[in-house]
Length: 63
Image 1: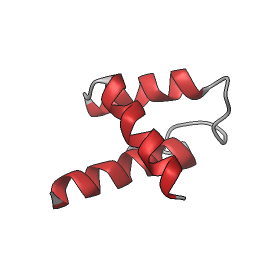
Image 2: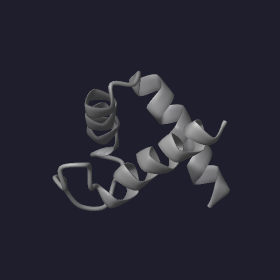
Image 3: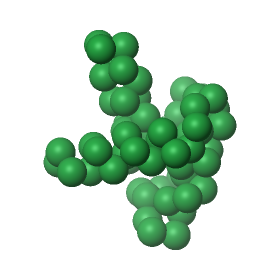
Image 4: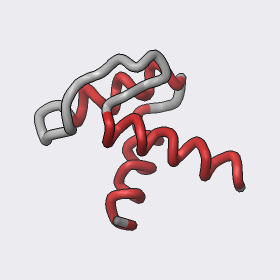
C-alpha cells in the first residue's frame, strides 16, 4: 500500500541520513551504530525493531 511505501521511505531516510523528525542525530551509519540506530528509529516511530530491520535490509538490496 501507498502508506507503507511512504513509511518505509521515511525509515530509510532516518536510517541513512541520521535525521529524525526533531532533526536530532549522528553521522553516517556504520556496522557499530547500526543496532542503536535501528533501536532509536523503532522507539520514536513506535514500530517493532524487527520490522525496521526488514525494511532497511529490503531497501539496501534495492540500491
